Image (cartoon, rainbow, N blue to C red):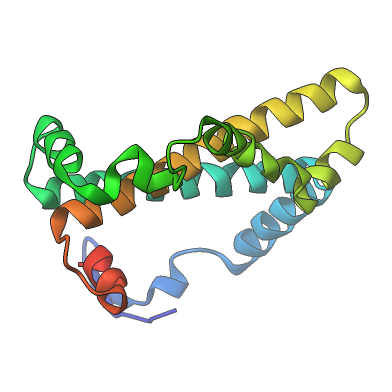
Length: 178
């Protein structure tokens, strides 16, 4: 902690003190002990769950913010972006899925986004569930959150392409950061 001298005006005297002297040390010790006791009392799975929820909210907010800033950086409207992507050969359906006109190959790509259900973290959360209804909720919520995160990451990739279509692979992270 940085100690700064600050003048305080008393009726008769000019008193110089530090920020450390503003609070009683016993009060700080008691407050920090109470915070530790409350955390330990309410701890266990509740504190872990609360931490996970806050991390998830922060993660989603950061991804959304980066995607929005990248959209602003492109300087184009949504209609201009869609028309630009329609003109690009890389974003034609036959080019994206490499289906070569076969409907079967295209249909085989449909279950791919749902393959993340067998992730170790998801299985751990299922083991922690108290029953089948809670298990169903875990799979529902994790699938929904996974869909949101992957969608924002794909949108960020589209914005990089729209911003500079000829950008080399080595320069992509520099483009995203700036």
